[in-house]
Image (tube, rainbow, N blue to C red):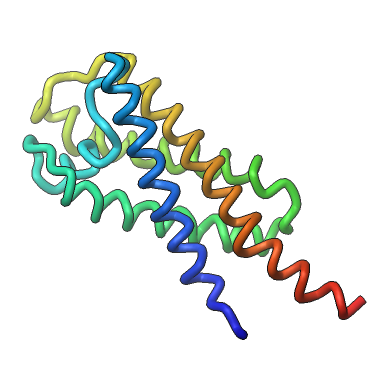
Length: 153
């Protein structure tokens, strides 16, 4: 059976961002941080009204884009150290998204400045996103490819 690697990569990104949201919600419950990744993503669209549903859509689209770019980067650099590269992909995605949030939403004063703990929550969540993305890539993209090529040696 032929598998579509790009579709699989995109689904891995969606799963990873949902787990990032769960991680963020847990930390927010314990008083660390103010906004989850879905809430921050929805601010780009709604400006000052956080929405989980709109955040799910926007964060998923960003996560799919990061996952596809990560897949292309892995094809170029090789499929070694997939989880470490995944963490770096998540962190680069965090820097990009954080610049957008700050420029579009926080900078013009549409929402109050976030506490520093919120930035730490988001960078930790980006690390979790990248780790999960690397794990899912290892399981669903790299491992099937290795088992398929095993007989061709």
